[in-house]
Each structure stands twice: as structure tokens, then as C-alpha cells.
Length: 95
Image: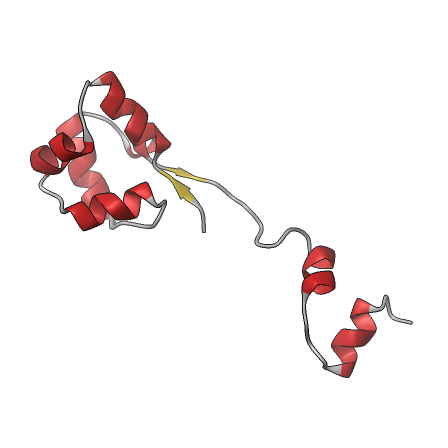
């Protein structure tokens, strides 16, 4: 799953705030902010607190980026390393 908090970072810039300012205002830890910086999931409660304190909506601060892992199924099969006969047959194009 790919989550982007770019909206939050832009909002902080618009409000002339730093991440540390947000931590104090919202009451969240540096590890929570680190998760957000790395695009990891945080709880809805955290997002609710951020929205409440920064006067915004969820959609303003978080965005789900749908990215298939490893490309299409054919690319995944071509890259995979499995010695199962059925898998090898599929990898070789059914020949």
C-alpha cells in the first residue's frame, strides 16, 4: 500500500509550520511523524487530531497512491524465481 502525506507537508508550508511545530500542536510523537515522512500508515485517530488542529479534512493531508507491486502479472512471473513445474510452464509461456 502506498500512502502519501504530501498534502500535509504542503499545508505545513502554507501555514509556515515545521514538523516539530505540528508535533507540539497536535500532540503526536516524532516516531509518528517519521512514519508519515516515510509514507507509512498511521491511525485514523492521528489523522483526526491533525485535521482538527490544522483545520483541514483527511483528503487535504493524505492520499492513497495505487501502485501495483512489481508491475503487471507477466512482469512478476518473468522476475520470479520458482522451480515449481506449473510455474515454469507458465513462465515459459505454456510451451
